[in-house]
Image (cartoon, rainbow, N blue to C red; front, top):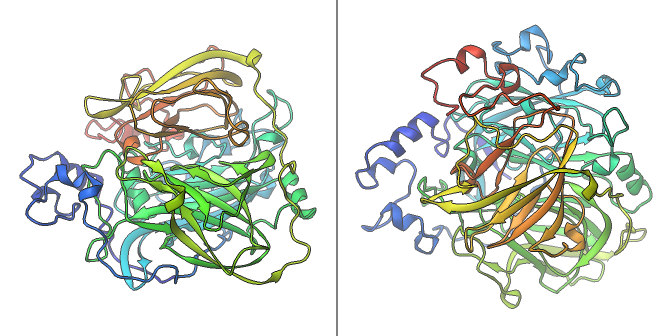
Amino acid sequence: MKQKTVKANVQNPSRRSFLTRSLAPMAGVAALAPFVKTFGKAARPELLTDPTNLPPTPFNFTPFTVPLFKPPVIQPTALTPAPGSAQASLGSAAVYHGIAPEFSKSHPAHGADWNDAALKTYKVDILPTTQQILPGVETPCAGYNAIWPGPTFLSNFNEPCVVRVTNHGDTETSLHLHGGHTPAHADGHPNFYVHPGKTRDYYYPNIVPREHPGGPFDMSEAPSTMWYHDHGNDFTAINAASCHAGFHLFTDDLEKQLIASNVLPPTYGDTDVPLAFSDRRLNADGTQFWDPLEHDGYLGDLICVNGNAFPVMKVQRRKYRFRFLGAALARVFHFKMSNNMPFLMIGNDAWLLPQAVGATSFTLTPAKRADVIIDFRNAPKEVFLQNAYTQTNGRGPDKIDLANAKPVMKFIVEGAPVANDIKVAVGTRLRPHVPILPSEIQTTRVFTFERGNGVWQVNKELWDPRRADAQPQLNGAERWILQNKSGGWWHPIHIHLEAHQIQKINGSRPSAFNAAKVDTSILEGNTTVELFMKFRTFTGPIVFHCHNLNHEDMRMMKQFDPRPPGSPSPLTGQSFSVPPEICGIPAEELADPHNHLFL
C-alpha cells in the first residue's frame, strides 16, 4: 500500500471555516465549493443528497488485484514527559488535555488490584496523508500514524496503557475506544477534544467490570475485538470518511487458553485477520466526494476493505479467523460466500459468544463487528465474499438479493489442506455468559429515535452536552427500551461504557448470535429492542447514539451519567459543567464566553 505525507488535508476543513461557509447566506452552491463536487448545470444541494443522482467514481480499474492490507501492530514507546507528571498535566504545553484522574492510584475508582507495573505507553499522531483507495490514485485523508486503518493495538487484561494522541490536522477530534471499559476522560466523548496542534493522554486501564463492588473482576465481560475511531462533535462523519479508524484487540487468560489448546488461532497471527468494510466515492481529482448537506447518510460506490477497493487475499486450505468491522458511515452489508460456504460465528461486537454458531449469511451495520471463522479446506481455487444488500440511500438497505449478491473481496485458495488445523466448530464453548437478571433491574427507560422537523431526535430532543438525559445508579442495572419510530430508517444504536444484553426484538427473544453481549443494537425500520445493562466502575458523562454518523452529527445522541446514590450529576442543562480534569479542557477555556465549542 503506497502512502505519503502531504502538507494539507483538503478533506478536513477546520470547524470555523466549515461553519462560516455552511451557515453563511446561501448563494447557490458557490459557498460550498470546497466541500461539494458539483456536476453539470443542475448542481444543486438538494440533488446532491440523492445518491441515485451522484456522479460515479470516474476511474477505470481492475478489481481484485490489490493485496489485502493488514495494519501493522503498534509498538510501545517511552513518552516524555511521563504521563501523569506535572509537565504532562492539564493545560501543559506537552499534553494540553491532560490524563484521566483515574490514572492516579489515589483516585477512588483506581483499584488496588490494577496492575500499574505493567503500564505500556504509545504515541499516535493524526497526520494528513494520502491513500491509494484505487491503485495509482492519490486520495487525501488523515490517518492515525498516517495509515488506514490505523495501527493495531494488542492489549492484555489488566495490563494498562496510555496512548498519547497528537492532532496534526485542523479539525477537533476525540478518540473513542469502541467496546472499551474506560474513564470518561478517555472515552471519546464528542466534546472532550484534542484540539488542532494539541495532545491528550488516553488512559486505558484494560480492566473489566467487577461482579459486585469490591468483588472480583467479571471475566465474562472481557472483550476480544474492539476498534478505535473519531468521535469529535459535528465532525465525526467527515473525520471517519477521512480514515480515522483502527483495530484494538484484547486478550485474557481464557482466550489465551483457547489459543493454546488449538481451538482458536494465535491473536493477530497469519490466520487471524481484521477486515474493516467501508465505502467511498471519488472525484476526478482523486479527492473524496463529500456533501456537507447530506444528513441521511453517506454512500460511496467503491467498497473498501482495510482501505483498498475490492482487494484480494491468498489463503491456505485451513480455517481463518476474520474480525469483520462495519466501518462505513451508513452502508449496511449482508455477507455470503460465492460458493455458499458456511460461516462459523464466534463473536458479536467486542465479545466472544458463549458457543460458536453456524450461519450461511449475516448482516453488518455501521459499528457492528462479527468474529467469523471461514473454512477454506474444501473451497475452489477462487472464492468471493459477496454483499447481498442493495442500498440506494442513507435510510438503510433496500432488500436482500442472495441470487445477485455482488463480490467485494476475492480469496485465492492455495495448497493442500493443512494438518493440525484449529478445532473450533459449531457448539464449541468459548466464553461463559452471565445474564443480567430481571430482579437486578432498578429502572426502565424508553428512548424513541425518530425524525422531527427535518432533523434527527431522541425523545423529541436534540443532544445537548449540558444535560444528563439519564443518571443510572453506579453499580446498578437498568432496562432500556429503544424504539425506532422513523419509518423505514435504520439506526444502529451504540451505547458506550459497557456491553448490553438484548432481551427482546419486537417482542421476541433474539437469535443465539444476539443473545449474549453487544455494544450496538440494530434498530431496523419500526423496530423495538428491549435490553438490560449495568453501569460499573466509572462515572460519566457517557454518550449513546446512532452510528449512522451523519445522524450522530445531526444530534441523534443522548448522554448518561452514572453516579453513586445521593450524588447528583453536574449536568443540569444550564451549562457545560464537566470538571476540567474530566473533560480535559482547561478552566479558562471553558469559561471563555466566546467559546462555542460546548454548546
